[in-house]
Length: 479
Length: 96
Ligand SMILES: [Zn+2]
Image (cartoon, rainbow over the protein chains, first blue to last red):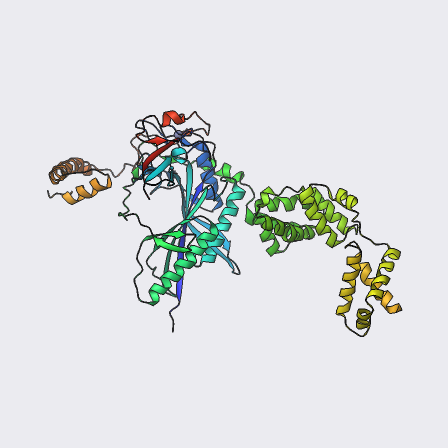
């Protein structure tokens, strides 16, 4: 029988923190400045310069660690991680080694078609980012130090993740949580959120971990999932053939959809960490922790409970609504002015999301005023427009920015509920489709929906469908 | 006392620190470092039972800066001493 394997994954996320200034100096912490214009002696590592910790950075770091249910350390310090690379002007990175900000957290995830699972967070620590290297020219690497010294958090999980799908769910859940915290813009394209993975496999049921491979260079969550899927297959097939899995770092190639060994010479990773003498140790004040806890915004898990409890939305739909902070806020705003939350949720989840997906647009850029949506839903509710017309009005509102009242008025879309008018339409339909009418009367139920469709078509979708149904049956009874 | 730091240790650290040493220099340095270690070792004889460990020479904690923007260098100044710079960038031999 073929041996079954289990995969074991740990993820390391580097999160860029959106303070106004860098971690240890007053340079702007901003993306897109002119190259090397947001730098100073501290973040360029000039001799004699002195780094001083940004208090907001610590505050945001504590906030994030608390939201991840971590234990905040009483004391922490910064260490120097020593290595040579052109993006690192000091030849060391200020990081945290044995006394990090926080440890032992938890994040609950729900992977696709799976039950909730708690992923343990090993640690969340503070460290500065390096500069940016550009390799566009032959034989030359260009260096921009604007990113050098910007604040990061490294969020490391325990090896609790057992499938590429779980890794994907973890990243989505983490990003969602971070959006609610407002400590980072979480923009992967700008590199504000980067993820490396450690993956190994072991025969199912075995406790000892297998040989660990580090995978880097994934630039999207889907990329992480794809890289892990590839790596799982690669390692399993090596194991099936009794070949050795080598401990190494591999890079994901998103074009070829494969991982490849990193080509730079693998030096022994010996970073010679030692306490940074330029930075004094920190005692994290319990009062600060308390203050941050008290000002913590409502987090996604809590918001989900609220939406289920206060608005009677299903667990599944509530999960979709909170998966994007902007969408949850939009729903709550609409629910304030229209007392049919389920209808609102349905329209957001089906129609609006469908529209945004087709435009590949994020919800936060969706600018339809909530009042326009709820006004339109009210018009549908009171029978002024039909459900079919409502969909047209929605797309019209999105593009023209007009109110639903104006659109309905200008285009004459009011629903036809006038019995005399509808009866005339129906009679005409029955005359045109005498054979179908006969089919219906001889027991072919499906013929009715065809006839309803014809009546709707004749009125350009404006007929009240309930009345059409009723009148059709009446009229056919008279024939 | 036997040599705690061997010539190989010296060579390894020198390589990590990108320092080129001759065989002779490595030998001299290992002897010197061993002397230093031996001297420092005297500290181990002190009774530190009631002394709290510290990670910094200064008895000071929690030095912060407000999150306020301060002027940076101009691009021109940042690149003033650079051996190879162009279009606002530092240029180094290709590293990938
Ligand atoms: Zn700076």
